[in-house]
Length: 452
Image 1 (cartoon, rainbow, N blue to C red):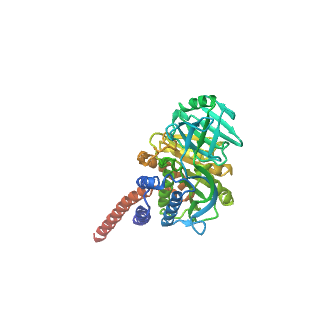
Image 2 (spheres, helix red, strand yellow):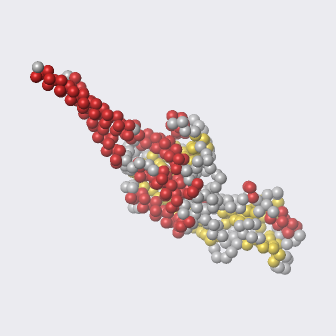
């Protein structure tokens, strides 16, 4: 009887060992090094800041779709692209200028682009203005507002007098054009205006409409009609300035889309989930989260009951990991609270942000559970200094420790086996050896007794 019990447990142990051993070799090990290599590529100078509407942005669309295809994702449509229309700032011929002229049109002073002034990318509903003291001008210490015809133009001194920051483009921003000025330039311009001179400014951008794409693939679940899990990140950034300085956008957000692609490699190898898992590269986040809003509006019926995990700025060692919910969320919002519990169990510090400033916004507006994981380090974003050299693989691993547990718990039944297959493999191997030895020992003793 004893040998039968041991044999039973030996069979169970061997089965556990076999399954866990297969998993050990089959499962793609999530690699923060892979993530960083993709960040380096996507944020390289070759892609010129990935501004939506540009050829380089299209190239990244193709790169993501090819990655999804090679990792075995199914396409939602006939291909991995889901197109939508948007307005974008298109560079024009000519050079920018900010000049002072007298009443006869004689040039008095020319300001230097990038040193004295620079465009902020918020809007280019109009790209030129000429004004003087006869126009409606309002001054403060840091801002000059000019109302000319049906246009409103803002000239301002940016925080820390930093002309390198480049805002997102917002087509429906309230003013026609935004110009940053060095702190010494604004009072000087006021003096020129008070003295009867003309100020003329031209920024060679025009607003055009184009068709761009989100990139969508999915792992089919056992029950494709169940509410899905959505994993997402945006891949666009803010392009280049008029001097050719490239805003590489490594942390924001080559990091998020690279993290998403590595999650794709990992999750595609751990077995079939209970429900569909969608992987989405959103475009035009820097234009006001247009890609995510298009997706939610188009596929709203499919998303009922979904859980959404968005990744935006993953890889800074300077800050704690943050979970960002919508403006109406709190720490007690169920999805936020469950992530807090995971962090507490792993002794990972978690910060909280509740603001509509990434692609979770559209989902929350439609009452779909959604959060954004981010490293809220704003020191380099939207400047030419946001480069892959500053990305921390340790911070990427930190996000994976938290997000993967919540994703797998949401999408898979056997998530404990998925997480602990290494431990199960080791334990079952030892138990198989011990039980085999015990069975042999019992058999030998039995034979000895029979001989006697």
